[in-house]
Image (tube, rainbow, N blue to C red):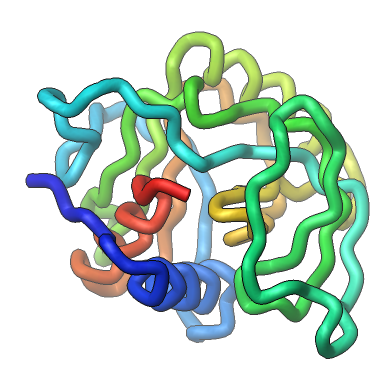
Length: 195
């Protein structure tokens, strides 16, 4: 089943939900890990034309509080090959990020899946994306904060920056902490939505 977000306001609502859950502001636990099972819910529709997703995974080199009015209301995702300065989805943090190790064409599937007693957004990567994530996490896992973080970028914002404690080389990234399937599905839909 495909879920589409036709309006910018729906994308903003989903972005706010994703940022609240993933930044820990919701009080829910957040984890990043690997999984071995294939995606099971709400993946990219198999009958849809090939599209490049507006999703990137980048290294974080620094972060700082964003003074009021610093972050523009509308933002676009920068080209994958350049360093960038991006605001968080809630526009309270500015991140300096490196080039994308994973971009939309490296993503095979984004879905919501059961995870422990809750739900997660699962990002399944192509072989090229798997190699990029493995390289990125190998460096991040031995770095000090904030350089030990992965920035998940979509719609011109860092949707979440998660600390890395181990190399992720399985090609699957689970972002957990969702207490309902509908919340995980909305977050997955945000990542699937066109820019």
